[in-house]
Picture 1 (cartoon, rainbow, N blue to C red):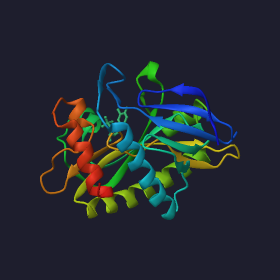
Picture 2 (tube, helix red, strand yellow):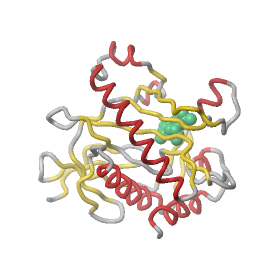
Picture 3 (cartoon, rainbow, N blue to C red):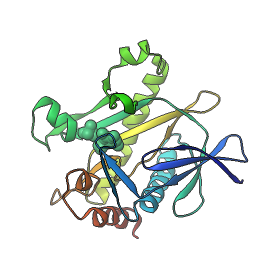
Length: 236
Ligand code: TMP
């Protein structure tokens, strides 16, 4: 499989075509943005960490019954993935209050929910990824009811697996964002990434933040937090 032209450049990754019609290559960057690109920076080594952590977790999720776009890790930063068309919904699952949830509802961070919550944002940078409900997603034709049902089911399955897995590594999974894609036959698979960019990870004992909130909130120790997560999960 040969790498061909660049198809897309996002805030944290680039996507390339390949000689195989059904396969893309994603290339992870060290670039970091927050607040819809208003804050910009670099997190040294992030691309390689997010690539390897995502691939490791997606392979585990496959064995837990969650289909993903993962095909093969090619090198530190690049991975072959199945070609999908991304469902333009950011799927956010929360176990504890934090971030926009805490702000929107005027509550402190760290409230443990009796059950996980799920919400969607409409993936649209021009609009700042607004919160969207099922009926509006249907009205806009972003997904079918069957796709929405499947996505919710898979997102909760991801949560069940990830939450338990992280706990074994003394990490509380606070919340995370997933994206799903459609294969050419319409099958829904988990796409994008699972990394400290897209999850909130708190040390179970100290509640220290081990994720991108260190960058968003100027807390310092950003690279160290990414490396610590890598060390805990992959032992490297
Ligand atoms: P939020 O509390 O800001 O809505 O974020 C919820 C989760 O989604 C958190 O784990 C960070 C992740 N996230 C992204 O992956 N991309 C984004 O653009 C935003 C705003 C959040």
